[in-house]
Image (cartoon, rainbow, N blue to C red; front, side, top):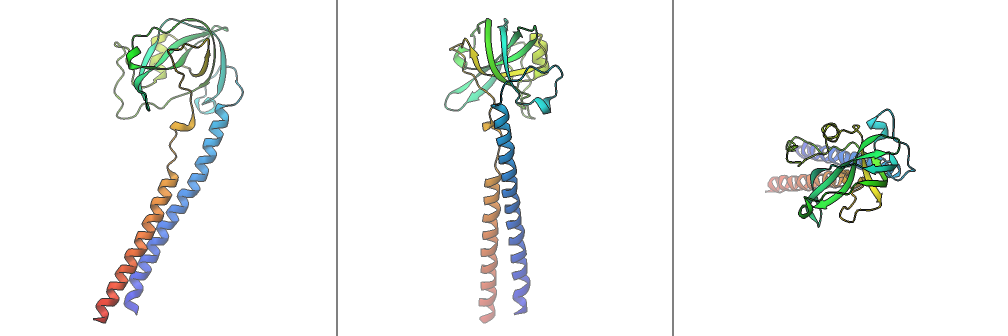
Length: 225
């Protein structure tokens, strides 16, 4: 009987560790859902004035409402839209009624409209401050000369368009440009895979127990023979 004890303990302890990891992922899921709810609430909150002192952590997703005018010039950021395909985000300089000039992410145009010259002039904009994390280790360097950007790099973009290093992503623009589809900030791009991870750990725990039971059955069978 004692020869079964070690593999039984090994199986139970291993399964317990895997179940513990699954429970931890469920706790992480609760935490992440709470964070996403806070972000969603922040995005939809009442507009606030443009900050005088920039604090990306405190001001991320801050809703703003701007009155002013679009200035000439637009940078194209290569992106892809589900069920639409490749296209570009258009980033233009926007001068507020107070005289500040900021970057304005106007939205999406398809590749076929690459040479579109977006309109200028007076506009009202509702949107959110954002500090995108588009760039990673595999992101190509921007082709500034060819006006093809692969990430919304706020510093270089503000230098190219001579604006403050402050990006507003439009939710709505009045008057609207029918050729440009706003791509407002949302929680859809924020990963939340904790449920899948939890199910994976629980499944592995089940497999571990089945393998342990099979091993003990074979031990018993071999002992009986």
